[in-house]
Length: 187
Image 1 (cartoon, rainbow, N blue to C red):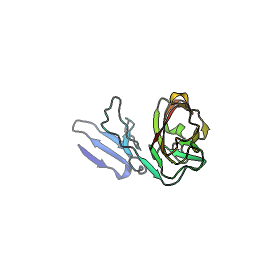
Image 2: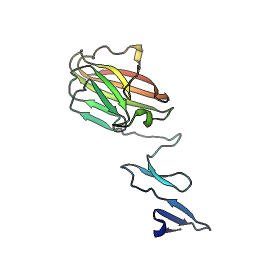
Image 3: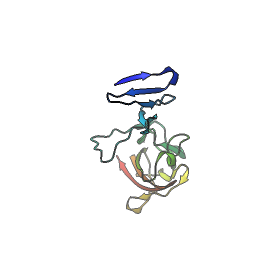
Image 4: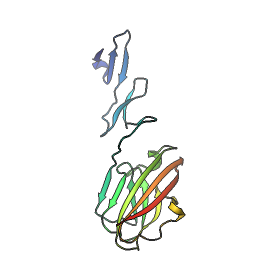
């Protein structure tokens, strides 16, 4: 197989397989971002995108990104699913807070997830009193009522240690979600 670069047709690679015929691949016009792969549309056009795991794939171990923050949550704070799977706030909570889940700054969760996708996130919050807790939950700044373990939403902190909130978010339609939630205290 030979690879020929044609200056008159910049960005195009023509491959000549051992058998007869040619086929061309059109390179992306710009570089991708970190951790992206080159993908094909099946018709010769190449682009950058995220790697995906196929149906029935076997995963031995999954490494998740943890953000360790030395600050307490503000009244409303954003949880960006594109940059973390777990958030650990090491400073004691000083107020109740609303957790707003989004894709990233300027990117909605609605555009990040397809209908039928789910994502599980965790928020570990250091606490030293029974006063402060995650009192509200939003996705893309729109209120969503989670379905809590044992049908009971928290009404205070567990006391001391770390309260671990875990949310499984299922996208059921455009900007429509079912959220399952739990809170466990670790001391």
